[in-house]
Length: 189
Image: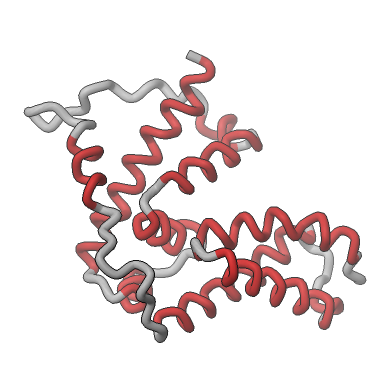
């Protein structure tokens, strides 16, 4: 099966958006998307047409992102020296609960989750909510839930403890729940 270059160009934007969400670095995102498109063009025979081209390219992109993360772990970044994007996260997290440890506001009824998940707009809003997460928290969430890396691999890549990863994942999920509650479920309320 052949790969249509016009279709590749239309898929470039969503692939780039996905890569930027994970890498939080425009130059690296451009590079991995370019490598993905080149891989598809160099070996069009590997695309058997058993899935959509977008799904096929996203699979390649996931591996390219993992490679970039591994390469980046060997580099020292000075741009984040002294930056602690988790400082206000504790305050935001604590605001969700009352003194007894219960939610201040009861979560809204999500209705039929399967029907919600089928709606394209849900994923667009989820993507926006992930972008609003603190950089490190969002990265851990993306590595775990979208790239499907196991905890040990995330710890190794980021140089953090297992406990820290689980805390960041919990915080990410709580903040995503709150964001979805406001921006997705709030529409129908």
